[in-house]
Length: 88
Image 1 (cartoon, rainbow, N blue to C red):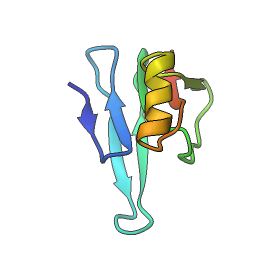
Image 2 (image 1 turned 90 degrees about the vertical axis):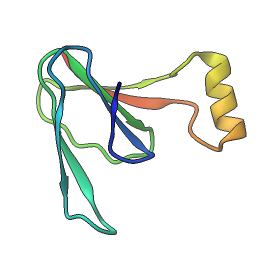
Image 3 (image 1 turned 90 degrees about the horizontal axis):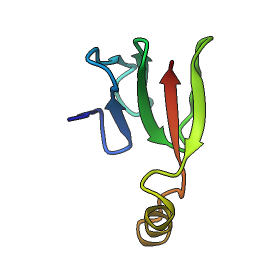
Image 4 (image 1 turned 30 degrees about the horizontal axis):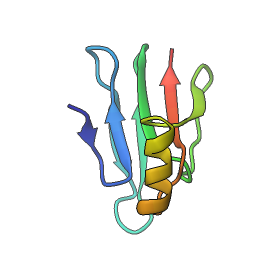
């Protein structure tokens, strides 16, 4: 099962090695630093601020398909798309 940082950021891995994450500046202005091993990825909210290193791919994906995206957008006021960060 995916590790959960909070309600907005999910840490997921597609390999046996999980991403390492560290919370920086805990409190009101906290941020998270994630180290992705090769072949792993994470998903986060589309409006999250993301910085990345060379070799990492950031893409907008429609998680769960078109109807799930519509339901998420209209019923929960979340974004239609989510952001996927992947280290190939």
